[in-house]
Length: 120
Picture (cartoon, rainbow, N blue to C red):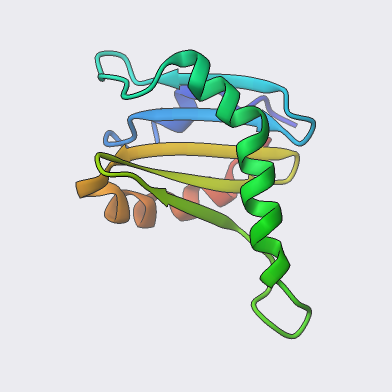
């Protein structure tokens, strides 16, 4: 199993502003802004969100997942005024990436396949 790095994730698309990865147990492996990009939130707030946010949001979403229904949760998108965050479940944790709201849908569509292929 290859260790996932922030450089790999930021390298997926030049419009990704921020990337974070947390294990299923809530251990934040990385949580970083792209160099030179203004952060809308504090590093502490980002890390705090990553410790429980992905698990809670995907867990709640999975209540809609039934064997004959929607299928399993792959990702959740959170839209803010300025920014959007894509949370994706990986085999051993959760990956989060953000993009400016104006570009987010296109960016997330373009990187979705690459994210699914990432080894964690």
